[in-house]
Every structure is written in C-alpha cells, then in structure tokens.
Length: 122
Image (cartoon, rainbow, N blue to C red; front, side):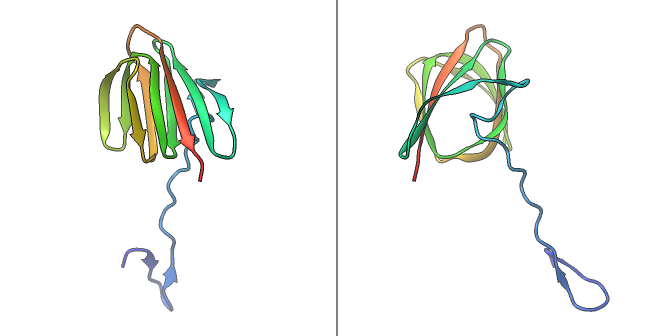
C-alpha cells in the first residue's frame, strides 16, 4: 500500500515526499545575482522586470499564475519537468500561464532579453 509502512503491530502512516519549494522569480537569480526587479507591488498585483544578458539565466524557480510580455527578444533554452526546449522570443510577444512548480532558463542568444511578469493577487 503506497503511503504506509508495515511493521509488527499497527500500520504507521508515512506522508508522501514533499516537493521541493523552489523560490519565486524575484527570489531566484543567476549565480547569486538578481535578474528580476519589482516595478510595482500592491494588494492587486506584482510586476517584475527580468533581464537576461547573453549567457545569463534564471535558476530553477516556480511561478504563480501570471501574464508575461517581452520587451526585448532573445533565444532562451528553457527546462521543465517535461524536458528542454529552445524558444526564440520576440519583442511584443506575450503569454498567459496558470503557474507551474518549476522551470529554469538560459539565454543562449546574442541579445539581452527583457521581460515583464505581471502576477495578479487574489
């Protein structure tokens, strides 16, 4: 039976392993340096500007639901639990995400990428 250990006597419930709590995008950085800065933070939303020069990345972190907008494009290698993809991101592109447990990225292009992340608050 998953989740239980059997010994002589009654069964003892063992909780499932806890997922590692990754930092949020503001807390996560790259080699000890911040890549995101707060532009706005109030009771309704938080807005971050994240900057990735060539060769810079964003260490493994989680995301709450958010909307993103690309100010300056770049080529990012993005790794998630599902695998790794390379994305050419263009200025003016945007996306919505329902949030996720973790991902990490590395700018493998020749241009500095700059993104806005807008996180609505409940």
